[in-house]
Image (tube, rainbow, N blue to C red; front, side, top):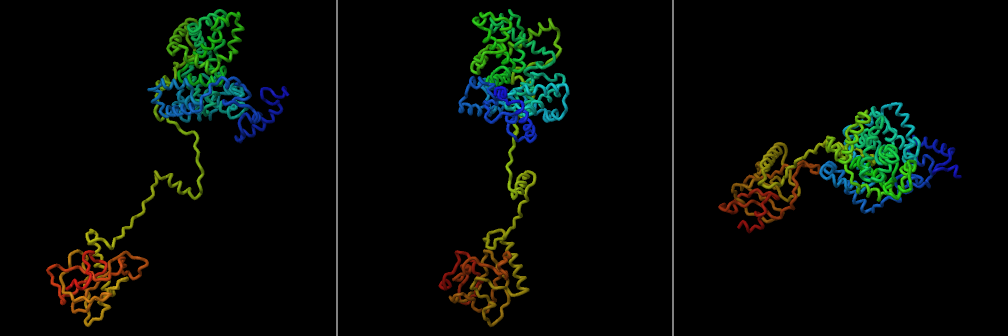
Length: 590
């Protein structure tokens, strides 16, 4: 049973069968995670960082658990910083450094790393560059080496456990693009763990630009041919160790253990293959914020912890035993709480590193001559990188990487298209039809034009046919009243407030409905107002909204006009009276 299952994997026969199925599902990109494809069952144990099979057995135990409320509070602060990154990085960088030392929230770590390293600005200023490099064929010399190294990068992580899985495909794309981006430097095996750590937290394009920034700004010359930069930093580490821990320095000098023998993997991989994962993440948070001095501090803390006490050196450690100790570091010195506290307390600044760098560079030139690879100057942290590279606020603006569009019903597609194009195509306003108010007040300026229209309509009706009667009215016109003499038609009355000329009026007869008595004077013909045509009114007669009057209503004559029985009756039009000039009874005429 133990022979068939080793390190959580199945036997070769079973693994091959499952991998064959996995290759089929990889093309469809719809079958679980890479660990399930590669033969791990659903009962596997995966920690919160994505590692399978207990490979990080003491990482979870040594991790410092942050209360959920504190974590949410930090996320709000980091969101504010990332949304106003230009202001924070230039004016409040000490606060940014303090929050990086406390630890970046896991949900925002990928975005924060991209901003700290300057990869966000680099990506925006080189839009489409990664896509172009990805479509090109790489150098066969580097492609073969990269393909052989893919399965060695975190083989027990969910992302890279499957050969040919999504994680290994993205890792190949990033490393191949870098060899095309920097053909003079090519590919180094230590770049694969750096790119893999970035891919665990961000997409392939962001990981590529993060790798570019680390190789060019944080660790320039580390991955070039000859490894001269890493050898020079080894001498710097040895000189700083003499200040920090003299016993450890004397022990290494006694056994002639060169720094290049133990610190190459530490520095070139940024401790990603040395420390527990919780400590790796905290170290990277500070490393991308403050630069390479964090890498030097971590190395000095480990050397001091392992070789800095006399009790440990009394055992008579030789060269071989010392190298074994430095390869297998004791877990208590790697715990997140202890390591981060010691790193922050160590008094090594960027100025100390640069000062020692100049000293060791002069010594190198005396013994080895000039460096064969001219590396660009090293940038110590995010503040130096952002100050050296010009950028705009548009470069720092966050763009969504996932856009969710909900499907709409078919009947709303046209409306959706109209709303979507509202900024360019505007709907024409409906024409407003102006309807004249037939009951406007006499002071209305439109009344004059209404009177003219009424007179024209009356004259045309008189020439063609007799005037129609008023509906809903009890007024009797002269045409319907028996009279001895025919009465010639008269023009329509004026609707202005000017009172009509005085005329003699007969004694009214209070009979309802009121009728105009026959008289020798010419009769008054009342014409309807010109109203808008209504489909329900076929004879174009006027509609009166007021109820039929029960009394006579005529404009009162002037005060100096005598009222007697021989006066001529004034024209009386129901519904067009002044409310203060109504006649209630026949006593008014007496």
